[in-house]
Structure formats: C-alpha cells, structure tokens
Amino acid sequence: MEINGTVFANKGNLNHDEFLDKFIEFVEANGWQFGGGTKQINEDGD
Image (cartoon, rainbow, N blue to C red; front, side, top):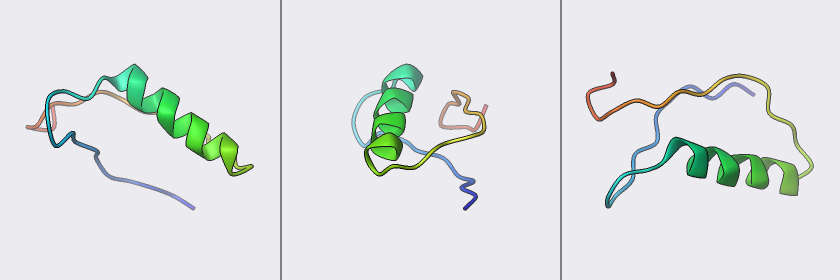
C-alpha cells in the first residue's frame, strides 16, 4: 500500500516527531512495517 498525502492538526501545531512516534506505534501495533520518508510542512505545503 502506498500513502501520499498530508496530515494537519485541527487545533494548534502538530509536531513532526510526535506524529511519527504515534504513526509508527499504530503501524507496529497492527504487525505492519513502514518503509519510506516523512517531512514537516506548513499549511502552505512548504
């Protein structure tokens, strides 16, 4: 499966490390693996 998109917080800022920790926890809790990259962007996509 390939995922290509963005995640934004409804309130406040979403810290990249905090998101990645929760994402990896979710992936591993389901017995899955993640291979790829992530990067922090702002609301303008930069």
